[in-house]
Image 1 (cartoon, helix red, strand yellow):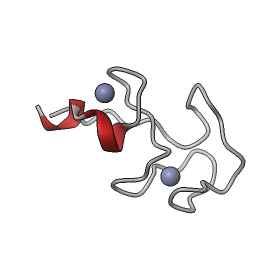
Image 2: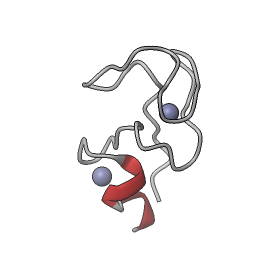
Image 3: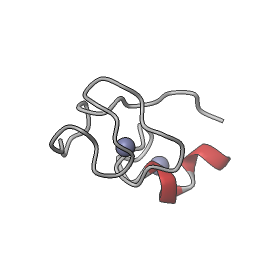
Image 4: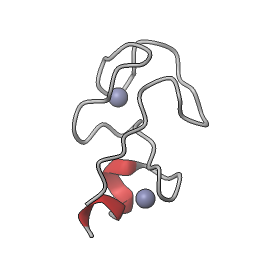
Length: 54
Ligand SMILES: [Zn+2]
Ligand SMILES: [Zn+2]
């Protein structure tokens, strides 16, 4: 299980603060399951790609 997290504002596709998925501000870590959080392994949505569950 990877403990690497990409804080809000460091994704390739930066959204306006606060996060539209979980409400955190730039450089805070997303709430668990946030659809905006980017996976550091594959660059996809961390909540859906499944990389964290291996
Ligand atoms: Zn978020
Ligand atoms: Zn992934």
